[in-house]
Image (tube, rainbow, N blue to C red; front, side):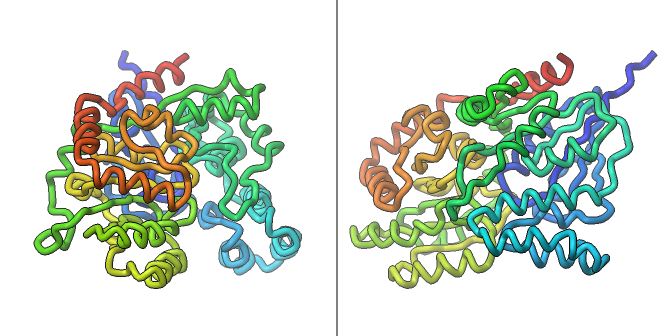
Length: 414
C-alpha cells in the first residue's frame, strides 16, 4: 500500500522581495514533494516573489481580513478603518481603546498594535483542514495565527528570523514578554535562524529552551551563481568606471539606509570616484528622507536607487564592495548571498554580525554609525590585497546549508 503524503501548512503574509520570503523559497524548493504536500496560506496575493513560488505548492489566501497582517503603529487607523470599521461600524467601539493608547503612549505603539492585532485576529475564520504540521514561517504574527486559528495540526512550529531583544528604531520595545511567552509555550518547536538569535531567545525565556533549535537559512549556492549569469547588471556599466558599492535592503531606518548620505559625503571628501546603489523597496516617505539627506550632503549624484528585482545576483557579481549597514537583524539572507557571490563585504555590527562574518574572517564588521562604516569601507577601497584575500577565503567555503532541510525532517518526525 502506497504511503500517504504528509500535509504541511506554511503560514505567510505576502511575497515581497525580502529576506523571509527568500528564506521560504529556498526552504520549500528543498522540500521532498514525493513525501510532503505543502500548502502556503498568505494574507494577500501580493509581492514581487509571487511568481517564484514552486508549482508544487498549493497556494491559498485568507478569504477576508488579510490586511490585518499589515498592521503597524503608523497605519493603525487606516488599516482598522478599511479592514473592519467600513464593513461593520460597530467595531469602532472595540478598537477605540487601542487608538487612545497609541495617542497617549506613542512609545508603546508597537506593543499596542500587537495587542490590537491579536484582538481583531479572532474575527478571522479558523483553518479547518488537518495537517501533519503547520509552520509559522513569517515570524510572530503568523505564530499568533497558527496557535489561535489552526486547531487541527499535530505539530505547530514557529520560525523566528529576528533578534527578540532588539528595540524598534523609535526606542519602543517591540515585544510584550507576557504575550509572547504564552504563545511560545503553545508551540511544539521554535526554529531560530542563527545561534545568536537562539541564545538570546533562550536567555530571555529559559522555560522554552527545550523547544528551541537552530536551522540556518537555506541557500542554494549553485542556483544563486547560475542566476547571476542570466542578465546584465548596472545600467551605467558602459560609462561609469569607478567603484561600485551595493546594498540590497528595504528602505527603512532598521536597515541603516539613512546613514548612507553621510558616509558618501566622507568618501566624496576623499575624492573617490564611486557610486552607491540600493536595491529594494520601502515607504515612499522613507526614500524621500534619504534623497533629501543626500542632496543636503551634496552627494545626490552618487546615490542610485535601482528599485526591486527578483534577481539581485548580477549586481552582486559586478559590485566592488557589498555593504549591509543594518541596525537590527536576525541573520540576513542577503549577506549569505553576498558571501556566496564572493563579494568583499562590510556589515554593521548587528546582532548576529560576528557569527555571520566569523569574527571578520569573511568581511569587515563596523560599529553601527556612519563614521565607523565609512572607515571600514575606505579601508576596503584602498587595500586591494585585503579585498582579494576576502574573495579567496569566500571562494573556498560552501555557504549553501542545503542540509538544513534534513534537520527540519528530524524535528518534524522526532
